[in-house]
Length: 159
Image 1: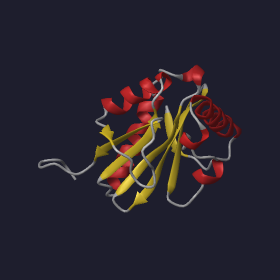
Image 2: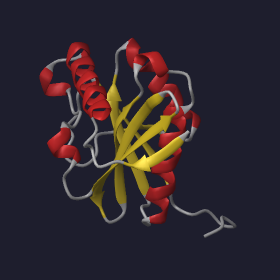
Image 3: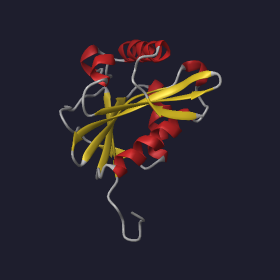
């Protein structure tokens, strides 16, 4: 698996992001859909990665800077046919690694509440994300789960 910063120009990425947006809109009301479209993923402060193997696109994810100490995980998606390959975890770990290298103290995310999001909740919890309240410009929403991961160094943690 190769994970790379992506310029969002390839048709495979466009298709996956369209699938992602369609799925998000099918799972909740429009005001509760916070997925980014292509234009917003190209905004300053957003870094987008894709994962590939010989069979093609395995998934994607992004890191958006909220401020100098806080980042947000965005656009985590694997194609339905390529799920359970480890790509989601690998992309998430890359995002966490980059967030730490940027000096962020906290990494947060917003995801859905319906059953389709349970695998995502489990993935995030497995790497240390915990439930939290709304952050950044988000408001309390019964269709949203907010999670955060502390990136603050603990005594003895390598630089």
